[in-house]
Length: 220
Image (cartoon, rainbow, N blue to C red; front, side, top):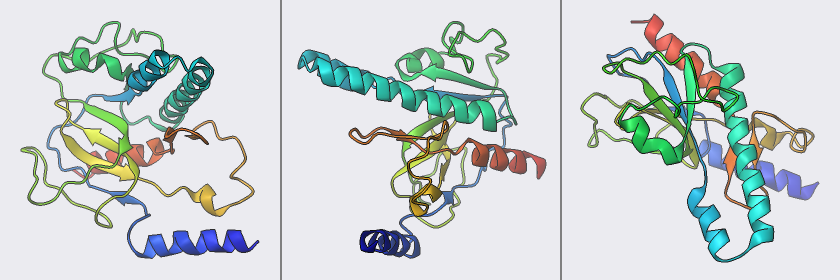
């Protein structure tokens, strides 16, 4: 019981210190995105390293957990993002996406090649990738972005939202509310994954992204 109270106290201190809280940089893009592309992590480098070191038993577990993390991301966007068409792609195909070669690259929520792609050569879209939170300051402006923040500098991981050239236009971080609910911590959540061994994880944030994107363009 004492350990639980200590855990709550530590997290509470982080919150009031501005280190662990919901945080978002507001959208300031003038262009209306026609779609959102979600980048999925293949973890190719880490898998290749395990193969080269012949750690086959560990490789099997790592591949399984990387896949589970990927599917949690897909499920979250499939069920909680509706304001724009959403497609997925594996990070190893990033160069093809930058060249707008979408056929056979963009995937649907079944991770099959998407057949309903309607992105024209000059269309504007957003790329979302979950990872280390990036932070823009007034001294670091993209040419299409005026940065605004909630809560200051983000810590940990976030959903980073980028323009077609992979320049950040927003970020969304979320509190892991289950962290405070000890009964829920061990319950399976299809929209969330956290490895107990590896630095692999995903926290649901598609619904918040959906809400902010819808609110931004309704207010214009």
